[in-house]
Amino acid sequence: MISLVIPVYNEGAHIEASILKVQAILLENKVNYQFVLVDDGSRDETWQVLQKVAQNLPNIKALKLSRNFGKEAALCAGLEAADGEACIVMDADLQHPPALIPEMIRLWREEGYDVVEGVKSDRGHEGNVYKLGAHLFYSTFNRLSGFDLRRASDFKLMDRKVVDAWSRLPEKDTFFRGMSAWVGFKRYRMAFAVEPRAAGNSKWSPLKLGKLFISAITAFSSLPLQIITFLGGVFFVGSLLLSAQTLYMKFFGIAYSGFTTVILLQLIIGSALMLSLGIIGTYLARIYDEVKNRPRYLISAEVSSTRSDDVV
Image 1 (cartoon, one colour):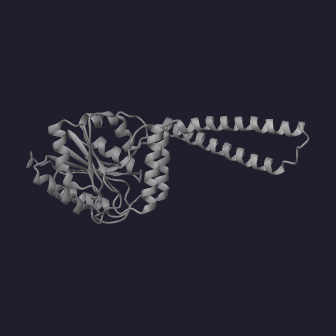
Image 2 (cartoon, one colour):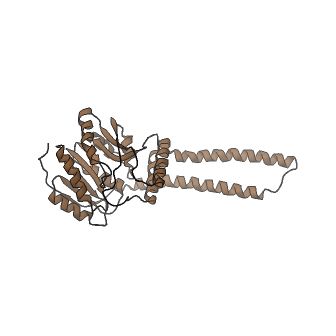
Image 3 (cartoon, one colour):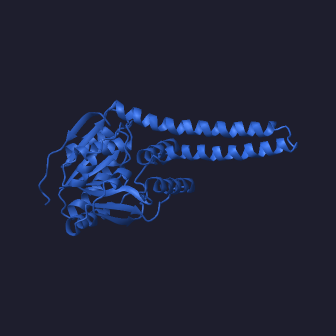
């Protein structure tokens, strides 16, 4: 059985149509399937639609989180609730083309790949600012962590042993793409073109993307902390050179008032200190969040439809 894990947030207008489209492809290819739909605290009628879908369609498991915990937490909830021998993670807006699902399953079944991950051949209709931001993020992440996630997406098939390995990672503040890359296993990269959205707009605001960037970098690299040491070394060398220059000018009687220089040095050093404290504070905040040991998510309601054995 294949579990399709789909996080859902304010998708009430089209989620039923999206599920029916994916289901048609699964039935056409005789795939034994299960939908795991996670309502991430939607503010529209999404949960009511998911309850209706669970009543009318077989093989549906729907979870409602107690509030909006974010897509990463919703993915955790879906993967931990999935029962299949493999899980396929995809978006509810069908930008991840469901027509590729049969090929992903074939690669898993027949060629023995543990992970079949979708990589974007293009970024669709994203604006230039978002494309530039994505390029900078993935380039920085690659340099700092050693994991190349350029053109990566959440669209992927994971064997049960990969899901179990991923589930054993204990951190509360998760970054799914990075964590699924960290566990390793035999992987296949499948290129796909990003489809137009079935409906609605992106739920990722610049603020949310910025928080994801900080979370991802600090979760997979301690190099920013080493930057502080580097800055300290740079300023130490600079101070030695400036001291040598000052003594030279003093001894040769060519010293002059250095008010501007002092002010500039104070601004530069003060900015470096504030930046350093900010980096240290970010890592301390991550430690603080982890040691609280709060759950990644809370489920307020769950509904399941009956199993159907019409497909094998």
